[in-house]
Image (cartoon, rainbow, N blue to C red; front, top):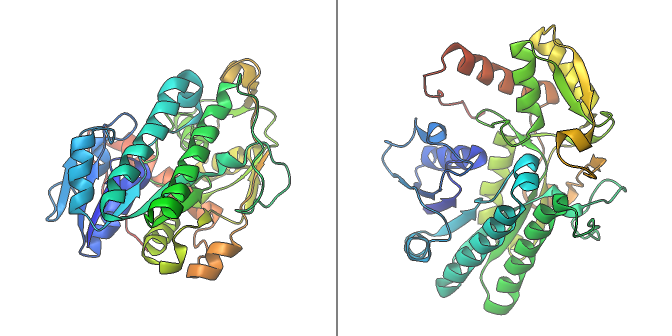
Length: 334
């Protein structure tokens, strides 16, 4: 099979590319490296069947050519991370919506199958958990840039479903809940890589807010396996699926556990959201997925415990710290 992955040099995209190559598929990626990195694909870029293009997915000519070449398309290219969203709201909105428009437009010509990666952020300020795919979305006001990411990804979902209903483009949507693992950077506010880096460096572990906000974390290997099954399942077309973990942990508990696992002497300190991001910043208090729908379809069940997820990041960052100039070694997929 020939596979196109937009955002293929990113954290999730690079793992997805690696697994398709291991399966014997031919993989094409497109990535403008705005948040992705050549380091993520260094170990696979010379493998037979791997092709990379350093350009934006909004390049109509190149995207049209790649879509035409491939059998299925994973659309992962997007603005990611709370810090990037707060600091560059225009870029966030334009990147997310324009990129999805271009991919779906060209996929429609030959009705190529497309998997759109969305986010738990679309549930907005809902406080009743777990979140189900059919729940109402509760967004904050438009003068709070925090919600521009959630709204742009919700529009991506509307576009994908509209292309399926009106133009018969076989689309499926995966709402990802806090995917974590090797190669993820903390540059744009990802909590676990930041906590691990701070703990290993002996810096203060900085918890935003009061630490009572909770999340469910998912290992990237579990996410990649789910995406590969979803894109091939005939009954997934036109549907939305939560993809996430089923263990809820508060951010304070997370900081304490990372400190313990790393044997760090770092102090845990608290930073108000107004100082961490911007005045009036609002966070989601809980993000807990209902995964019964995806479990029923493909038998999905997270395989990695929280400690296994944390240790995979700790070991990866220790390796990076020990060898700053070395490319990351391939990570075994279990």
